[in-house]
Length: 184
Image (cartoon, rainbow, N blue to C red):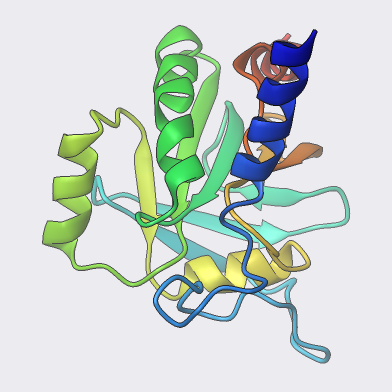
């Protein structure tokens, strides 16, 4: 029982280790991800993906219209310096492999990195899903109402309807269960 309590305590501390609050300049997310009053977050925008593809999106009342999309989408907001973000990569790789016909995982990079740095990170962690990069990632975070800490994930049905959001590390079993509900 003691070991279980210790594990839970460790996971809670680890999960919130990448929160923006209390971080110094080296580790704070580089672009502001807090929503700004008066900005129109319903306008269309696009996410540039490392594959060369562009994901066109627009906020609606139920979630997001995602152009030419027929799969559930899991957006995983992360930074390369964030230990919990790196720890969840194998889970995301597993989900992409297991549900590739019905699920699209998109990593949303919340820091500025060069294309070469992104490619190296993808190679180092054997990432098999797309990584979105660029300034529109910050707009997307704001359109969601702001991302207060990472890792942060948002799951959408194939029609773009909001399904669930997750802050911190999430057990693979829970995430997989939610994905199954969304794709069936």
